[in-house]
Image 1 (cartoon, one colour):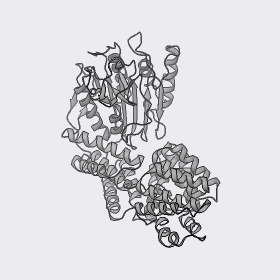
Image 2 (cartoon, rainbow, N blue to C red):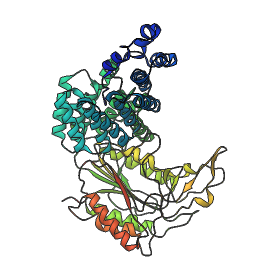
Image 3 (cartoon, one colour):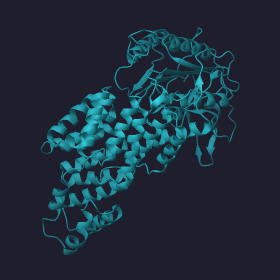
Image 4 (cartoon, rainbow, N blue to C red):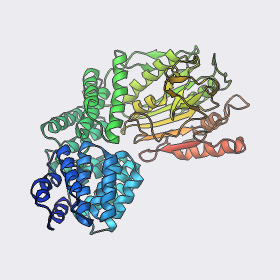
Length: 567
């Protein structure tokens, strides 16, 4: 369970303590104000009570609150927010602030959720529930220290399974796997029938490289989730089972059991994803299933530069690690440079940029898959091969230099053979960045994605329509990764960097390299330099070199400090 609802019995008592119509009290009231009422019946009962127009003030606020609870059961968070807002207008209380904050949380609007939880804490006595829920929002924002502090306060006020579980998750994000395991174990001891702590322990075992234990815990979590649906009305429908399936599937894949992994990814996609976390899990499952279904097994890139443009040299697929254990510390990189475009403006430097960055990454211990001037078919294959192998990596780096474009707010990388014709679908000719990010979205791995890919917009003069009723807009530069398509997110453990600010155009450079890649290949090999500090140095050099014409940009949800050139 991710969140906890507050003060239900108190609200029910307040609603029916005053005289009212007999019909509302005897027939509609219990249906409207019961946690166990099915969503549609609850909403209908509350609608009829509102229509009676017999309640005002705090009593009417309670009806709106309970109708919001009904909408929450259906996963309609916009309507939850509307009803909770009306309840707050009529009579602010901890319960309705918590309900609205929880709905904003499920929509992924964490700052607004935190503000509502703050208001809830100010409007009544200290509540372990509210500290727990605010801790969830801090954790989703990537502020794990604040999350741990809130969960600790929640445990002090009212020890419960969920606060121990989620504090364990936050500790895991901070790299404290042993502390995380201790908290998750305590959560399981408090309530061994709950599936979600076992799913959390699945993730920890996988992070520790113990895939057999991860699979065992995931299997038990799935059994429990199927045996008993979540009793807490604030648990998004289907989210517990979706989470259990995706994490067991990732453990199977990491172990090398691809058939069982595919079964779990298919099961993940069968669930109803009503919250942001479930949609992200399904986006990951969709990509992983596609990768595993496309070939018999993953391919391992050879740690040597390609001798022929547009080709990637590879070695046979690795055998799974013995006893279900991972080989720790694997560091992998995919480096692509596209410049020899046949139908849009060619670029002289991306091939040089890719070779320079690939060389720097090899020098600091990365196994590098390198591709230069790739057509669409080859670029798709190289990318898919890398994403398959990334399931076993501890650190994955993606670097791309060349043309890139945002279309309808989504980012695409452009192969050298792209040729757009009137009436053709623009996006089918390119590589969707969302697919790459969804394929890497896994909190037990560090992902660094770097795109020197907005050197101009070659699509603008020839952007075709995507259909008779809707035109595609091709904008300059790349879009910030705030919304990454159907469920993909900038997941925990990921940093994305652009050569220039979102929506802006980067320079190809007057010399052999772009200003960005020249600075990156130089600073990335600096030992003992944390990756975000490294990018700060790159940014300063690019700003200076371009006389303020280009300002690199980055966004991070990294879990702790990351050193590419290890100390």
